[in-house]
Length: 141
Ligand code: HNI
Image 1 (cartoon, helix red, strand yellow):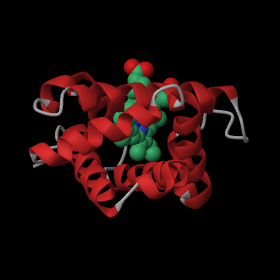
Image 2: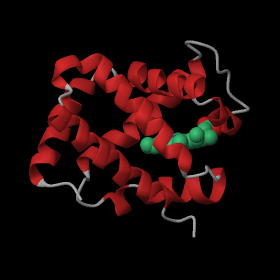
Image 3: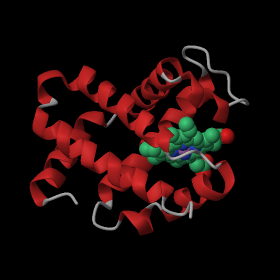
């Protein structure tokens, strides 16, 4: 799990996300849909064009959930329990897709934070996103 230094790096990096949640969330989703088009099957009801209102709105929601996770890094299972139910029982998103979105979000962070997205921040974020994805997929079986 994340050590104290990594938690600090994540909290610090998240401060840079504040104010950009909708833009950066939409950017991560748009990258996912373009780079891994198989992910589009879960969104047949969405307009997936560039700058679509639905993508922006959804990006904002996904980043709000990640922000909640940043605030509850010691207790992710409880913090994400409802979302975990939703993804496992209702949406039935194949867990491989969490890695794809996580990767796209890492690219967005790297693009916007530049040199500040150091290898240390990168690895901390990677561990954090793996932990979040594990919780979101833990109710599948
Ligand atoms: Ni996900 C809905 C968060 C990964 C497909 N998802 C949500 C909502 C949040 C959310 C928040 C909105 C819930 C609500 O309205 O009550 N999703 C997250 C997070 C991750 C994630 C934090 C990973 C880090 N979701 C994925 C992945 C896919 C996915 C990888 C598929 C490729 N999610 C969905 C779909 C919905 C959804 C589909 C419903 C969208 C809608 O509005 O109809």
